[in-house]
Structure formats: C-alpha cells, structure tokens
Amino acid sequence: MAEKYERLLFGTAGTPRSSKAPTTQSGIERVKELGLDCMEIEFVQGVRMSVATAGLVGQVVKNTGIAVSAHAPYWINLNAHESDKLSASQQRVLQTARIGALCGVRNAIFHPAFYMGDSPAEAYERVKKCLQEVTSILKAEANPVTLRIELMGKPTQFGDLDEILNLSAEIEGVGPCIDFAHWHARTGRNNSYDEFVVTFRRIEERLGKEALDTIQIHVSGIEFSSKGERRHLNLRDSDFKYTEFVRALKDLDIKGMIICESPNLEGDALLLQETYNSL
Image (cartoon, rainbow, N blue to C red; front, side, top):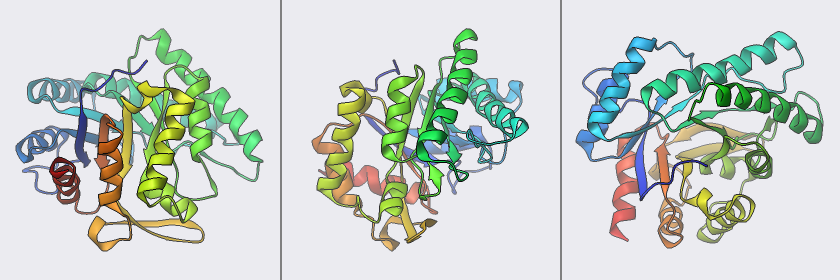
C-alpha cells in the first residue's frame, strides 16, 4: 500500500521557471522558497540522471522536506506489437523507478500505451501482462516506488479512468495518476464540481478510501478538440473550472500530490494552493 499523506500538497511539473538554475536540485530548493510542497522530476526525454546525481537529489529532498515524484519518458507503449519496443518500454519504466528511488520519489508516473488497432480488451491484457512483469522485478529489488498510470487525454491512447483503476486494483504496486485536464479533454465533460466529485467517488469505490489519501493528480488548463488533448494552457486562459475542482478537493478531504502542468508552472501551482487555503 502506498504511503499516506497528512495533507494535500501542491507543486510543479519540473523545475520552476524562476529557479536559479535548470537543475533538479535547484528546482526543489526553489519549490521550498515559494512555499510549495512538492515537485515532479521530469524524465520525459529520457532517464539521463546518474546514480551519483540521484543521490545528491535525494539529500536535497531530505533536507527540504519537499515531496517528489518522477515522470517516465514519453516513449512508452506497453501495447507495442514488436518485442524490442515492448522491452524498451518496460526498461524505461524500470529506469524511472530505480533512479527515482535514489531521489526519494514516492511515485513514478508514465503514459501506458496506444490501442494500435487492437480492441480495448486486447490492449488491456497486454498492458497488464507487461506491468506485472515490471512490478515483479521491482518487488524483487525491494524498490518502494509506486508505478502510477496516467489518465490520458486522447481517445486513441490507452488509459481511460476505468482502465487505470482496474489495473491499479489488479496489480500490486500500481496506482492511478488522475490528470483532470486530460479527463476533460478526452471526454469533453468532467469539468464541474459534481463531475469532479463523481470521479473521486469512482476512485474510492474501486480502490478504497486509502486511494484518496495517497492520490497523485495532474492539473492544468487545456485546449482540446474532438480528437482530445491539443496543448496545456494556464488555468485562467482555459475553460477548466479550477475553483470548483479545488472545492471538491477540500470537501472530500483529498490528500496526496497535486502537480501543476500549466505553462506558467509555479504561478498556477500557487494559484491552486492559495485558492485551496482560502476555502
């Protein structure tokens, strides 16, 4: 079971724009200076951090008390039809969890797969098998990182709410990362107080109350079309009803990490935190 949080934490997807240097260590220190609580380390272009650097990051995490997660490389498809691409995808998840553990991360977030012309049921079984293999390796290594499947923003991408909740329920060491901007873009809905509450209730029904005490959430404004996500926007430049979202977080006493992916990163992370604290 994932470690419970005492409260809801707010932070940035990557090093804040206002950091003194574009390094992970500087980013964590800047998050602390801003009065934010957490940061996601972005390995989206590849896990290029050395073991030595990861150890230094882990020390900064310990010194500052800032909670960290890690985002795996984008180039992951656990429904790939070629064995070499499937193996490479699994390795990228493993690399993220291994280096992430040295950094002190709790969660490793990843984009799971594409349907590749398969039925959702066929894709589900292949993704499940691949994830079971990965979690088995991490368990044997005593790696404490929870693998979190991100809710994806396009209908062509594997990873709707039911798919990620079912995998989280069926595989030990796996949990959801609920990207509410993606959920809005994928469906054209899920952008009101009542709909936010329904989503949280579905998580609780499938995974138990503890899932709402350990949650990992991505949020931003978003531009989308009938094909789903197009690009992230700042909250105030979008239709995302962030005040209703924050009200739902407060009313349901959600705990965990809120990672802001808006272009202005710390600006919107602080906006969400300030809105939450004002309620």
